[in-house]
Image (tube, rainbow, N blue to C red; front, top):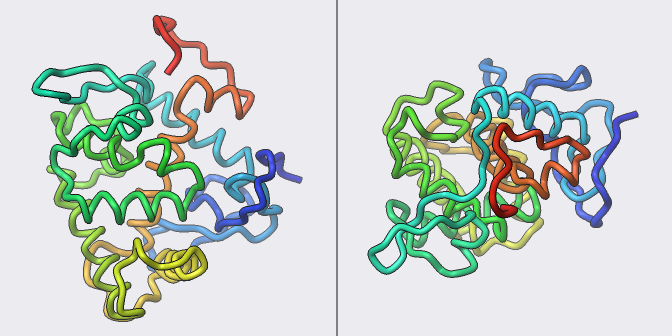
Length: 239
């Protein structure tokens, strides 16, 4: 049986990354989303620990020693190094995302993985959209989304809000937690009527991966999973 994360009383859907033997493809034919068929789904994220560890290790291979630590944010006209969590806590202005886009992305991230909002998923994505595409640490780059990646995120966020508006008369962020989970479950299966944007299952995969990265791609995140950090150069401060 899969080793899982400490319980928090929240049960969400499967990670959505086709790496586990107990996963089967749903939605579309691109294999972008999966559902859990055998593993228990409980704990902080409802995601079997092995799947998160597999994702993190593959990300570490891709980044070749880079990590989601301190990033360059513009504060008062000067660049400062902050974690995405710190940037959100300090209210650092977004560079590319509009306020409503950031709100939707935070709500989506929190639905996909509790803790993603406070971890700064919107600030992380926004900061990464501002760097040269070849330097971005976004899942969109790994999956060969055509840059500029801002086009993908704007199209995805716009599709989410339009589909939510058509379905419930409200944008995604104001929905209650149950409504948000139901919406995301339909999105990952490409079952939302009138969806206009990148395939819902692919949006699910990319944003779920971003959420996992921003929550677990830190020294504390590695420790919570029992993964040795093993940095090539240990950072001067914990991030």
